[in-house]
Image (cartoon, rainbow, N blue to C red; front, side):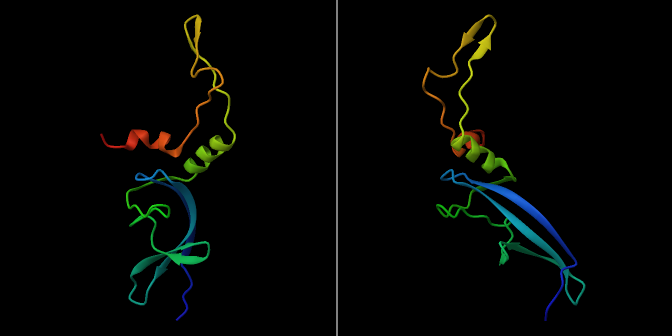
Length: 122
């Protein structure tokens, strides 16, 4: 039996593995349906293929880990842009003196794990 979705919404999420630091983003089509018994259910599709809900049991495609942080879309792509187009470090200014943020010639290399550091348990 072929059904037509009552409503389809588009959502995108960013994911970060807390085990290996791998980050990725994925867009989803979320189809809201009602079955013959008037029960609502949802179907998630990614790249046109039916997939399980990314919110129920996400896993890392890199290491298989199940401790995955879900964030709003754009978080991972922002870090990836910084990795490919690093800006020169500007000195921090304290009063009248300039304090170098990093030694001359050594820019900071951003990694996804840098953003995840506050979320790691101690």
